[in-house]
Length: 321
Image (cartoon, rainbow, N blue to C red; front, side):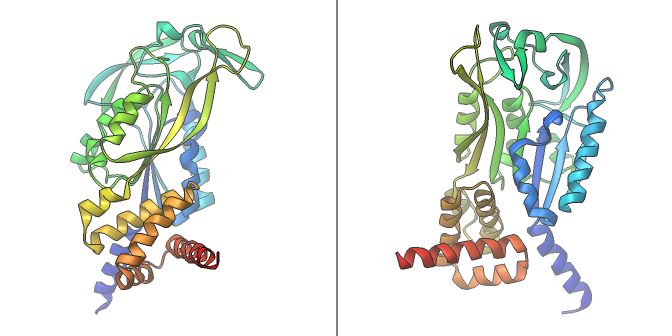
């Protein structure tokens, strides 16, 4: 094989093992629980989608924070000034007194008196979401960006969009029907924004695409009147991982199966779901031993070697019990 062929093969293998993470929103708090994927380092590609609000100076600060992550973890990062939704067109965007609560949705009249403590600060939802300004903004979908060859489809999707998460998932149908291995999405168990979709709606949508709920992070307990007792679970960030049988049934052949199942196993392992990572890896080792070994060697990626080291350590431990 000549130098050009070797270079092409190396580039193809490199792209095949690149883990594409998309994060939508959440400029006030980084990218939330999905930040644990930063440990993939140079094998991670991060695209951040944020509405371009001319009156909001926090985007510049967010950009600088992302640049810091890129340097610290050797991550490939791109910032895309796109407001994602379930359609292509224009929508009203509500810039609220508390900028981190700004949304495509109005505050729910049912939630005006909800409150909680954030450190020493009392947050009253109706006050935080009082609009300081309302603007008309262009919205699009991940499907539209993909159809126009602006993006490749992600392997992992993280969404923190102040009540608009369900709409963004609806607009990401091509990713849901392709090789997406995981989703972290902010969920509400009661209505905070007017007519928003709740946890049950997102759960039903993701289950229809063979995603299973694995965890709830960043749980927030709110109070409907006075701050006494433990409050009610109102907000969380939900981790969903794809059922491995989705890929087994869809891909069948190892050259299609390995890239997807290896990313699913890595995501499970990184998020601490070691039993699931072991189950996925065991399937590949037992059903395609030679092909899987060759795939690992050709990938020459640290996180896949780490996955196999975990697998064999656990395998030996169970054999000795």
